[in-house]
Image (cartoon, rainbow, N blue to C red; front, side, top):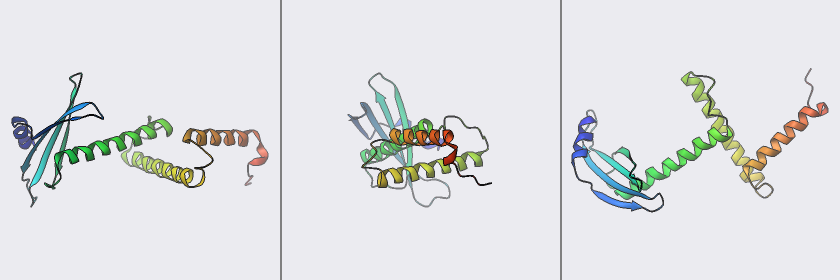
Length: 162
């Protein structure tokens, strides 16, 4: 991997374009190479993204597909990045995942899976059952909190299992 990265850094870019949606200048570099114990050649692609204020970042990608154009690869990576950002932002904002109280990797993974399942079930319920009645997720959360408050204040509504 180090060798292919160094070789790609010495070459000129294959394509150069401007992403209007993100206000970025994109330069794409690519090179094919073989890896040990891999039968097919691999395609190494590097995108450098430069903002107007001269800050830049890189995205590195390895794929077996040589048919996909560089701009399409960039769009795929950008779309995936947007999805990941929105999911993690929702988990941190609405699911209190900005702190982790259990630090073992299995526990963290289990908590993440449970939160994602709960979020998906909630989204499914909102979109299928409450779409015409409730306009936003914040309103759903407000109603849930209101009902929990009413349950706490009115002991008759809580089932007694003793």
